[in-house]
Image (cartoon, rainbow, N blue to C red; front, side, top):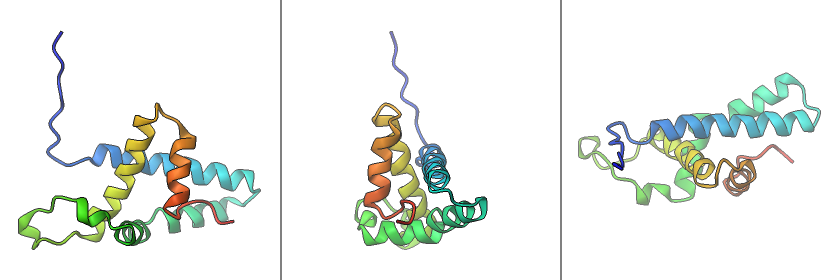
Length: 117
């Protein structure tokens, strides 16, 4: 049997897409359970899942120290790259935990992305 390992030329954007979807699911479900309106749920998702907010969280947690940066970008991590990294982490937790939403929920809470208390 031959094992094929995919080579990712675009980083982990597929994991980021999955992480974004899982974050949205968690926020929508928590908003629903909190009896929030659709507007409140959408506003919370827009704020917590925005690239600006995700990037700020990633930099606060120091994730930029662990990223390989394209030398053509001057050795700096852009907000977009950091936001994608945070989403990819959530996607990776989802996959690595056997698609356990509770595992992702604990990371979401630790990162300060959870539904407002």
